[in-house]
Image (cartoon, rainbow, N blue to C red; front, side, top):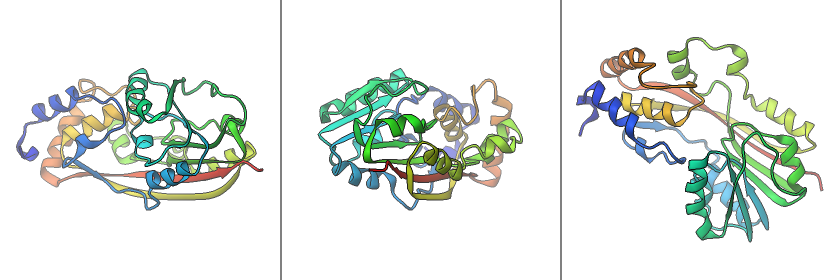
Length: 256
């Protein structure tokens, strides 16, 4: 069905009912697009995992990104804090010999010091640099793609209004560099890009805000129905709603 001819209520009801478990974005096919960073995180992560002996993936989500790696090291551990994702990641990664550990995001990592020669993380909510430095072996590496400053700010401000500069700039890559160095790590690579996102129908917006829950905290269809309806009408008249994601890649090494 051509989504442009569907009603507001139909699109919203569908998007409100679909599962948002895991970190699979295939539901957006044909309904939204997002440019990808030029560095190709998943491929680069896979190359590093292939050469590791013991690796840890922090905040693995449903395990989809880690599972994309062609080869996992002899010891592969992943942590995740949200119970539905723990179950999903366990089902996906256990057959490959990886261990999934339920660990709250704000808690210390439940591992001994110098346990891993590689730590990875894609889009962590927070980065606990001191803990990462603690569990890395000397010479070990932290490799991560993270959300940058003012990511998707256009959609956030549509629903929440103008945001404080402090919130918009909280994920500045240079802050990450400083925090990594304060934890005793050497930053060997730091790159940042802004990337175009287009939403072709209001259902895609609803699904995005239900899945990426930190964009509009406490989002529900009922709470934002008038704004959603106005945005639906705007998309029908003007075309896709455009926003921009911010991403940065950071690679930091523990001195040998």
